[in-house]
Amino acid sequence: AQSVTQLDSQVPVFEEAPVELRCNYSSSVSVYLFWYVQYPNQGLQLLLKYLSGSTLVESINGFEAEFNKSQTSFHLRKPSVHISDTAEYFCAGVSGTYKYIFGTGTRLKVLA
Amino acid sequence: DGGITQSPKYLFRKEGQNVTLSCEQNLNHDAMYWYRQDPGQGLRLIYYSQIVNDFQKGDIAEGYSVSREKKESFPLTVTSAQKNPTAFYLCASSAKGAVHGNTEAFFGQGTRLTVV
Image (cartoon, rainbow over all chains, first blue to last red; front, side, top):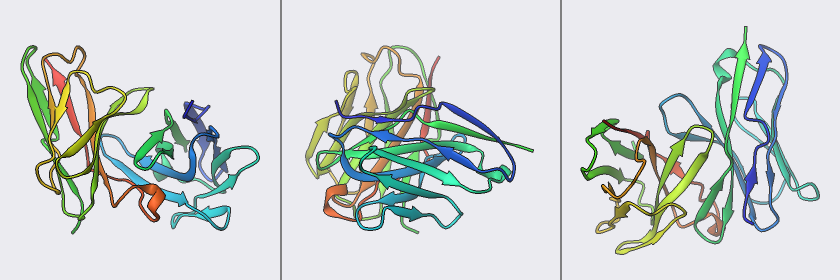
């Protein structure tokens, strides 16, 4: 089946602590992978993407994700989170030419 | 600024009525999409369109209809046949599809539909 799996529905973490949001994809999903962030009542914003090349990709606000083909994973990490990082994060892949497949999302709650 | 505009942001509908959600993009993208978002279920694809005058059903098309008469517009109609229409609806577009290169999906700000 074509799927993108985010095992953690909610992740609480204290401010300035590191965080990892997990994402696994099925082998039938093309290896074009994305992380999006969604703030309440807003649309999704692209955080970072992997299309090819270096397996480690970075965003401008300190997040990074590593593509791991052997483990079919694309986990999102940040070494030190801020209160403003509180949001829902979606991992996505591609099925076929046009169809994007989204995980069910992980709610990151940063605690003071 | 280029982007995707969805309107209205909030919409209330009585049971049995059809309602149309607007989605307009000025990114010159070929592909457009409609997703439905429910708590804990992520995004589910309703319809997508690869090119003007062509569209395909997604995973949950029943009770919805679309049209693509212009490249920049992809309205979604929620019909009375949709049994549980209350949800957050997201429109997106992409240049040509991810497999062609730098073609992630860009999203609008969403429309929250409530049936009263």
